[in-house]
Length: 98
Image 1 (cartoon, rainbow, N blue to C red):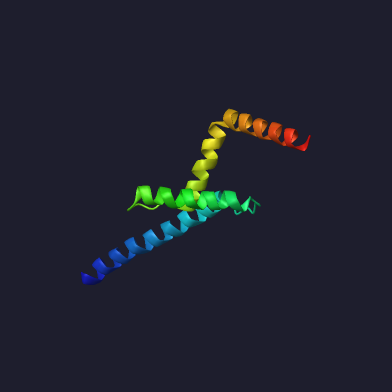
Image 2: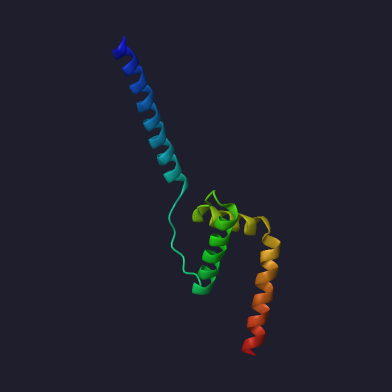
């Protein structure tokens, strides 16, 4: 009887670990690593903003990848404002080169 109980417990544990492996594999397929070159000052600002958000959400922790994905998604959701900002930046560059 004790052996039967032990085998049932081990089956449950093995089932969980294989489920976690499947979840990890699934997540790896959904994510891909990219390298981009970004202004150092902007990265410093991002790091400071991430640190502040983590402080505001304490004791919970916001992963940096989630923070960046949320910022990017927000930008995509408000693409018209991003275009306006890019247009004004482009106009400023044209004026400064003349």
